[in-house]
Image: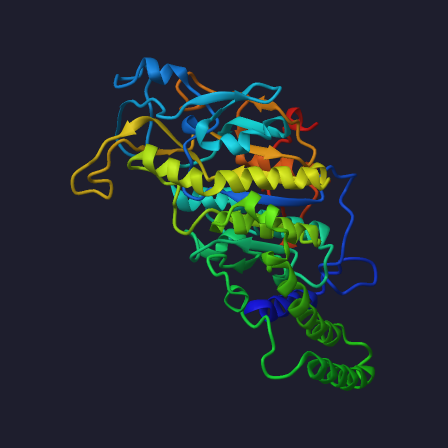
Length: 458
């Protein structure tokens, strides 16, 4: 549990014999990518449940024209949907690029000239579980390592006192739980470390972060003695690699007690910075994310809520307004904070969910799990929006488009595999060559798919 468990995961990874660098047994040792990278680290903002693209970053005036009427096209939807449903939100143009963004994300839109909006995303199915797995792990059904695990495996971590991959989700696990940040068949050191950011007390936020039994000086003395005994034991066993890895784990766990306590304590930030992010859970998460990558953590995933909060089958105006209100200020603050610190240029920020939502209203079916819903939208994997900022992407650029009504990717479609290939390219990897040998096969994040979308790279 807690940071001690992370250290143990590192030991297990080391014991499997994966060498991070020449002469090193530590799997988190910094490694060079295939070629010079534009981004060095990633913050993935996951809007869990599927935000509606036609209400956020993909305006569709034709929905107003057809509002309440049947659309002149067939829509293959998971549940029965009815007439066209115009967005209840106003879209405005922002920045020098004039990119249109919903009023829901007005604070985020202030940085639109640093954002590349991909309006032609597509996935495989309109169901949460497989779509979450596809977006996070590149595979909808079978156990595969997550994106964060692949990147940590490929690059290591710049802070040996902290996990290389941290995932924050307030209030508990999302659907598919820890599979979303699993290491899969990669060594355990690359597994995402889960933090429940609903807790504000440090001792609840990270279990076992403090040693309440002995002082730091006494603990240091105990570890020094243990190290001395282990070294004597090791000399008789011809420098056994597994034993050395376990010896290192004690030091790692000890160092974590110091670094982790510092990075998660946002009271050390100036009041003006904390006010800029806001005092809600999302503001706290975003600020912690910046502090984590600032200290060398390679991949930070920030979830918006437990369950599927963005899954607005019902009352989308009320629910999406509330949800955006919880995170818009914090996202806008994160982008500005990174830029003013000179970190945005080599930090890739990714925003999106597992799919989008229909341009038509969902119809309530008595006796089903959507009985009583009104003014909401169903799942839609055929076309949706994600955006990326910093990290070498083309800011102020809109890539691709859905059809006139926002149902299906119509221009320059980008599959999730293509997105993953492009992310790896920005981090300096050829997605076909970042592989891991398992069960007689060389596996990769993009499986046997994926094309780099070069048009979105600056």
